[in-house]
Image (cartoon, rainbow, N blue to C red):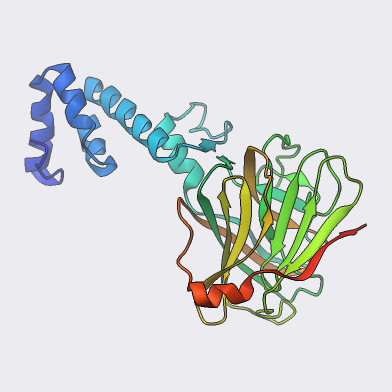
Length: 293
């Protein structure tokens, strides 16, 4: 029965035949099915539906241990089951896209929180063009910071939290040139550094190809990555070694003008493949951490 194909009459009949099996046997079979098999399995009866939902939620929580979907995710007035919350939270999404003369300063989180024990790699694609005031940035904010606005484009914080002192930790990267900005709790000043990365692209040009970039969280440490001019991933120096226990991945904007595209691509539980010999050339800082107002 477990090896039956789920597509077509043969698969549907095999799934329906499970209705005559004892509950414990059916539950054990469900635990060995993938999500694509659980869907027709759960469609055969109400009892099978509850078994499938329970099994899928358990599998999702196990696979994504350390990921917390946002509480506001809903299917209309209903709260979705746990497995569906993970799919909704982790699906690729566009955080910002368009061309404006004036963009609002903002910090826009993804709809999930990460435990910083990790390992987690959050991947983005970013384009900045016709932009005289820098680029959008990617990074994270202490998950304990409450979101204060939910206007155009979804939930966000007004202002770039990595550029102003707040009660919560925030850090961001400008991937074109490797500039890193950070704000720490209780500090009236912000910190800035620049990774030992060559500048790629020019945000003031009319167009730039999409850049793949992201960051690795592991053992409460943070390291940024991007795809370099040769088309391969490379990392940078570790920029933080004492992250908060839980963080929200974010996109940041400050005084931005021009075309912007920032897409969340995927959440991985491992870092991208890099060449260890080439990657060594990108470690360290071109400009060390310094305070700025």
